[in-house]
Image 1 (cartoon, rainbow, N blue to C red):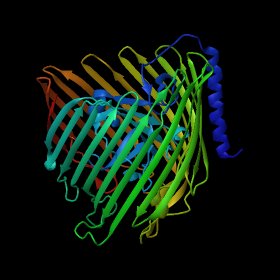
Image 2 (image 1 turned 90 degrees about the vertical axis):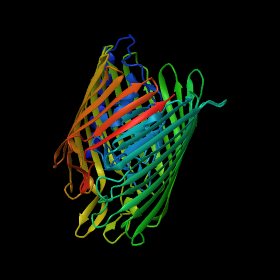
Image 3 (image 1 turned 90 degrees about the horizontal axis):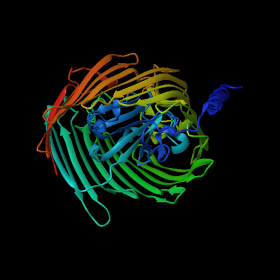
Image 4 (image 1 turned 120 degrees about the horizontal axis):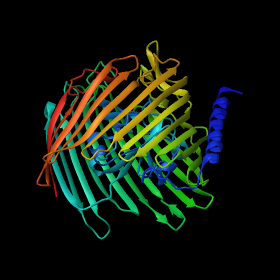
Length: 587
């Protein structure tokens, strides 16, 4: 039996054993840990039935802290305030994760450096759902490390405006207009953030526009974002780099349902323009221009029967790249997926998910997930899952060509076996969870330096072992929370890889959301980070705001109050201490 067969056998044995043991112990009582439904990954599946770890961030917690309050989730920033962010879940690289909006997959075929170019203002988000672990069995390519889903708020009438000022001549402006209509409320959102930068060639200007309508039956969304920014040391330290990106996203979906079925066809179009200038003082010296497009259709059907619930569907994708450096390329994908949720009783919730993808210029790939959730009692859920996931090379990894950096057209897809087990506990004001996980990755793609050439190559293996614990207490006035993730990775060529191995071995977050007297609120966060073979970092961030006359809010905020000098990417300085003030009016 080879190594891959042993891994699969181990996962199947664990799954089967838990089904047998827990089925014998199950009772016919009904339990519900929390009245929450998850849009992704299970298409409105109840939270207590999901076998993987899921983190749902919403409300004021999302507004104040964002998704990074979950320690297994990391946005590695080359530039602050969302200039350029690389998504990492459980120590995965920026290419190895999925992003969805309203459960519809977004992709960036040029490079996942631009995957987080999302024209989504935080003010319009209802929730962010984070699914660590493999996600290919439902979403296909890119589900190697995990998935994050952004859900929009229902559109509503109303108006909101805010202006702010901060360190390094930072300025921001935000406006939201909500109109009633016979069709449904329509929201228009526009914003701008700009600053001179804390050092030369780290200036930025970000402009965002949203137009959307959403209700229980349909969603129609258009978003646009343009970023101009100094990219000092982002790619090379020899020249003052500069970059500009423009991103358009159009999304539409409509649901239809009967007594036992639910179908929600959806369409997504994304176009991303990227202009890179090696020397901003001499733009004609070296310039790259890229245009990537993504067309995606998804047809999910959920069907309920007495023995089991079923989720089945198909996804069609068409991706193109028009590039001065990479050439012109086309990628077409067709995926078929089926998930089965057998109904054993009201305490045991097994699931089996499979997906088959055929991708042009790649071998067809079959991915799967086996899971089990078991409600031990009304407050405690045990869960485990095992699955196979993958991601295909980006066009940059395949076709980039310069005198010192070379792509590799013979790259093969990355593959991963994800195994995890954990628990969720919720009683009264206390919520607590823990997960231990192991990921065995094969054919990992990274940029390896050999002599004077850096080339994309498949590293043989990458093993990731870790655990996460999360807890929060919902007192009436004060809501403290903690989140801690430990990671350890072992790989060949780790020291010579450009991205693999740059992860947090320890990421500890201690935060609090407090309601203070005189209509004041405080959100504070202490973040301890220990990078692999690198420095320890202590970050303190805060927001304190006061509301006047129900319509006006004054907010003081600060980032990196200890003024830590650190890097999230080698050679790229992270932001120093940054303080600002903001005033908001809404009615």
